[in-house]
Image 1 (cartoon, rainbow, N blue to C red):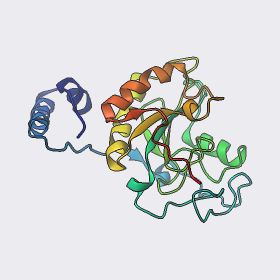
Image 2: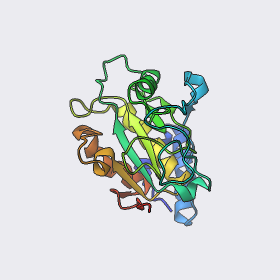
Image 3: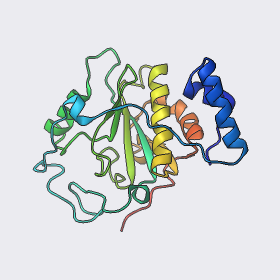
Image 4: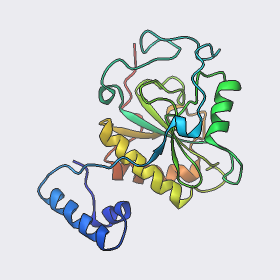
Length: 229
């Protein structure tokens, strides 16, 4: 069961009389050793943001994979809670002041990188809006060599040069909390922990990863990843 302090519950639920009542109710559940259900955050669907359909002729993610050790577009055949173990955090590497959008990121991934779709399963913009990226039932393309079993979450910004906004961190925490419970995840890692040649998600985001993991009840690092044969 995930542990929630009174302060953390207030942050997640909000202040005011209604928030206090809900916090007290949650405290009673925790005291009674009953599980606390994490509400799904608002997520803008692919249809709502105008996502392009996947291109299965993409040169660097061509065709369909029959099993998780093959390249190509892989759809998990089993319960996703059994398929996933880790959430990987990324930054987009573009400055917050840029005109970057989830559409422009998808276009770059498909038209420049040659992938079948946007690499990440979720994206968060500089207003804290959460977007559905690649369908959650399909393997992502965000951590080279470690994509199977990993959920990719990207926050827009270059966090080597600037810091994530509070509104982005709040949205990220709410999303990670929900993903951890929804898919019984065990670990949270930064992209660069899987691929050391990368500085992603940036030094100013990395300092938040321990807290993100703690409040979601996750372990830090890549230890949850199971090497495929």
